[in-house]
Every structure is written in C-alpha cells, then in structure tokens.
Image (cartoon, rainbow, N blue to C red; front, side, top):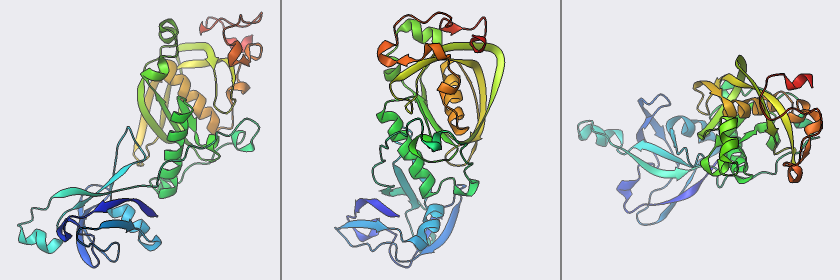
Length: 308
C-alpha cells in the first residue's frame, strides 16, 4: 500500500517514524501499545517525506495506525501516533502527546461505472463480508469507491454489486440538495428527511407492518433512465456492521426505509423491476404523464398494489 500524501518535516524531531525507532502507538481499542517499526521511513530535515508501507508491514500498520475518518470525506484518513519515543516519554515523566503526523489513504476514490441490468452480478445473491476483512485496505477501497460513485451519479444509495463487487455492503445518504429536486408536497407525502452517510456491512433487514405500506415511483442507477411504482413497507429495522466492524441497529421509516429496502434487495439479487407495478414502468422523460388504467395512485396504500 502506497501512502499517497507527502509530509514536510521542518526538523528531524517532528517525525518519530525513523528506522529502528521504538514507538508508543494506539491499538484498535484506543489503548497505548509499544511497537518497534523498522525502515518505514527516513526522516531528514527540511525535505518532503513519502511514506511507503511495504506489504510485510501492512497488517502492522493497520493495527498500529488507527484511522480517524472524516464523515464528509470518508476516503481521507489521519494517522495518529504518540509523538515521543518511549525513552523520551519516560524522561518527560510519561507525558506523551498525540499529534497527526501524516495523511494517507488509497489515492483519489474511483468513480466507477454503475453495472446495468442484465449483468449476472446484479441477479445473484451477494456474499457476506468476512468479519476479519472489515477495515482492510480492499474493503475500505470498495466502500470509498461506492460513496464516490453514489455521490457522482447523484443517488441516495448504492450496493456493492452495482460496482461489480458481489459483497454485502450498502451505502446511503440523503441531502437537502438532493431533496430540492422534489416538490415540498412530494417530500411531505414521501416522509423524506435528510440523513448523513450510512455504511452498512452484512445488513439484515426486518420489515415492520405497523405503519403499513406506500406506493411511490422508484428508480435505480442500474436501470438508468426509467422509473416505476413500487410498494414498500413504511417502517423497517436493519442490523449489521459499520465500516469499522462495530454492530449497528437502525430503525427507519418513510423514504429512508424505502432506500434501505431497495439496497438490501440488491444484495439478494433483486431489482425494483422485479417488484414494480408493471403498467407504471416508464422513462424518466414520461414520469409526469398520466398513469395507465389499473395503476394505483402514489401514496399510502389502502389496497395492496401487489394485488393490482
């Protein structure tokens, strides 16, 4: 893994990642631990330093360099280390300080072409992500690319199969900017509210029947240029793991619940066209045209659209 950013040292004392330097670093649970890391970088005063993680150091670096994520830019990281070697820290009475010493990651996230309907990856169940793989460079890269692709589209959700990865990972986010494309009346009827980025690994969705169902037009980045009416439950619960491996339990209603159902369907190899009201299927250009006879009116369901 190549650390993509450059760090300028004003003096040798600003960098303690020199060869054979003993470091106090933070473990995954936040507790200090001691490690001897050799040959990761050479500190020289007044020059740019490029940090290179060789393959044999990769697991050690992932363990000893906890990543502080910026939720607005989830593909950037800051590595934090205690800023004194053990000997210096002992001489200072154990008063170590923590400071960010380098920014690193996987270069710029890749905006991937979204896989379109017909590709087998979209029509087969996705595989669970192994717990031991969560937080690895590969899984982080996939998540970062998913977020970048979703935002570039733009869309409110994306599943890993949509970028060709047959894994159980979904990302979703709704913003005021995206909501501005809908009328206030539509937003209210859809029970739509903005929410921050959610990354869920191995999600398990449970539908709740208490609030009933609703029918609304739905689209998909993998069925580009089309829309159709789909009936969805108004309330769901989703359990799974965060991108750092911590357990998640989410209760959602309204439009957020619809997005979760749509993305979890992808992980089962299903598209919204498998559940749509067939006679409502149309191009986005014709979205506002009158509905065909027999199609339910968008909104809360009094009679299930699945019977139409």
